[in-house]
Image (cartoon, rainbow, N blue to C red; front, side, top):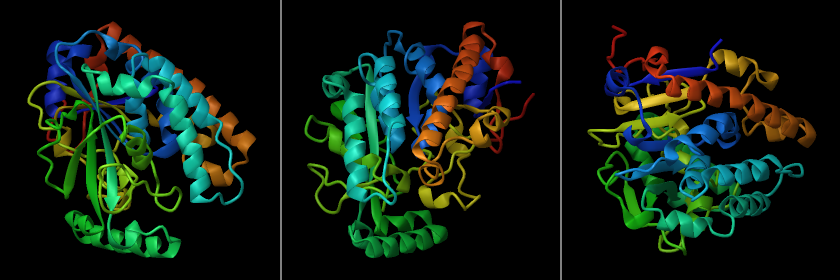
Length: 359
């Protein structure tokens, strides 16, 4: 039984079937929001991020992330991605909280995890990396959502959810997308016009605050005032870009997307809106995700998620997450074999709804 689900948009599928896939073919790697869900991708990340994509390149590789996805991409942008991933996994796994922790406590814990992820030199390595360029997505809150008062913030996000159900663009009244670019290279995302969007350069002063903001879940963590971004606090990038339903505007190259789901959901408030699923933006995307059978084999038959903090004691949660990470090595090994043996085209199927046939 395969541990992987591999789906590709029409242009990516044609490329893979005609020419296979080399690291140099990959132009973009997205990293989605999802909290603990990233742990199921540990085996794929260790192979793809920690090894396969490290071959020398003639053009930059763009790493685009929101929330925990931005932290994964921050690992890839360091000199030794495998070591950064190992540090991040170990620190993330050991989170422990009392019952109903305050947002400030969770924020402080997250800051310590990020400090371990970056290590003593990671920030400078990210900012100086010409070959692998990091793009961090956060959401700058406005109006009621900018408040740190719980019930005011709740009211703001309830309003935002209602507005989103009517028209996605209307959420711009409560939050706008902010994209921070290493090297100041906004070329990949400069065309974004679906939501109000601000672009900023990643610097030594704002790198850590931007990464913290990108993963600051509303009501769970405090908002972050990022240097150089005037106005309200920045929060989780998943509010605007949950699974990165983004058309990167590339005419060549592949978007290689290791994802914990076979669906790409547009924004956080679109999870219950089945019509908000990416289709046309995936034309050059290869989506690599756990298969349903693999997920069923995991502890409790599911991928780790944020509810585990509330439904499991620390020992049970940590043991389950460790088991998931160990099992994920099977996905990494299977992907390695498909790529190294030239059999990737045999395993990839079309992404449903993109207009591609199986012939």
